[in-house]
Length: 511
Ligand code: NAD
Image 1: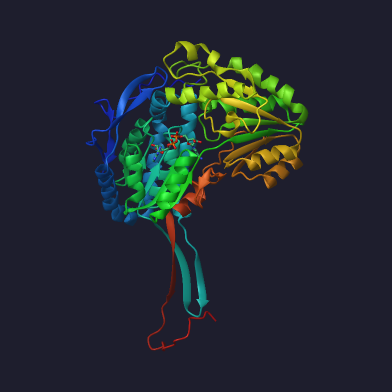
Image 2: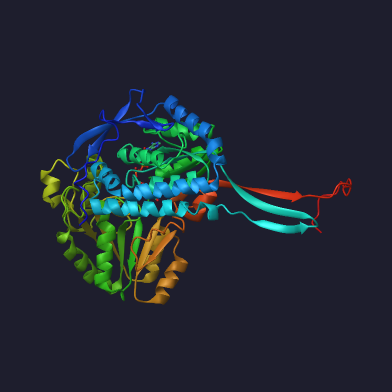
């Protein structure tokens, strides 16, 4: 087990409040509005975070706008060098960054380090920006005429991020955004804001000029100003589906380019021929890792035919062995949930599931830390015989609760997944390559795992769900991230000899 807890998470501001980062320095909020930042393992308020006013968002946008001409004119070689330095600093300081995640999100150190490793992939992808920005060139499209395409940055772009990946999701966005020559405003989750300031300080140390990367903390006031600010060209969002829909509709109405990733309800189909022990290991790892607070967590196991009884038994057998505890405990594999309110909402699904006729095989409320600790703990829960009409099936629970739905056939399993309004991730467990290939062909979901429970694409592909899991046209990071943060310009050029031109009112032809 990796030890991170020995490194103290340094509050992002020494006066106990996490401030904004505007124009290359910490700026204390003046709105008078603040929110609490909890230590989820103790239940205490660890510090506060400033909530920005409209004027404070405007100040960040002004700083980003002022920095844009210089940054976009900075050579690609220089920007590449800076991306390498950012990558190396995040790599070198990953344990301190992880400590911030454990302190405010609650995830255990090994999970926090995993988040940073996946974020680093995006920084590494961005170090290849000279290659990603290469355009196309067509010589002699007509006599003496060449056509070429270049990709240029959009200007000031913004990212609005969720609580569950306070380091990785910002890296999904800003790595490509700034490498492409944009300047960036980050509005992180108000629940765990310190990682964003730690990253801002690393970017500054790496040589990112003042104003290129800014952080504005806050709530709906800040988000709404981002959505209607005329100088913001594009918005990337990751969070829950209702807010993602709102961000997409409002941002696009205001003329912005928007990609808004929403919530999920990821199904794991287990066919009768699957290796039961492997499927059970995968369901437990992907269902309870990070206390189920992952958008790619497995929420629902769909057991096909005779696999159901042995699979439920194999999953249940593993649950008592999971150590739930604070990130400071080296043995802990699963930490608390992010807030008390969220923990209580997650627990309420156990109540409604029992009321609606499901079978509670394991009840996380029986864990001693749920009863005796002030931290926001809940043990692992397993609910069997879940049907689509139940609340615990319909809603995204986003906690350490795995449900099992039993079906008779592959077709029934497929219908469940395709009828679900979400389409973020899914997995199929089988030894039958033909069945797996058919599932990959049939399923209306953006990211598919074959005997892989959390199929988060590597950074040189792009991440995106379908249906209510993504609003917009382009997926996040990877090649589609480069497309999102740039626009194409097509140049048609010729260099005729003097005296060879003539007036021609016809529409230009290439032949
Ligand atoms: P959330 O939607 O509550 O918050 C996300 C961001 O939106 C935060 O910065 C928050 O301050 C802001 N926000 C919240 N309410 C708002 C409002 N009314 N108006 C304007 N802005 C508002 O999400 P969360 O609870 O922080 O994160 C968990 C959710 O994110 C889950 O639904 C999870 O599935 C989803 N998620 C999706 C992905 C993905 O890639 N699809 C990745 C991670 C998380």
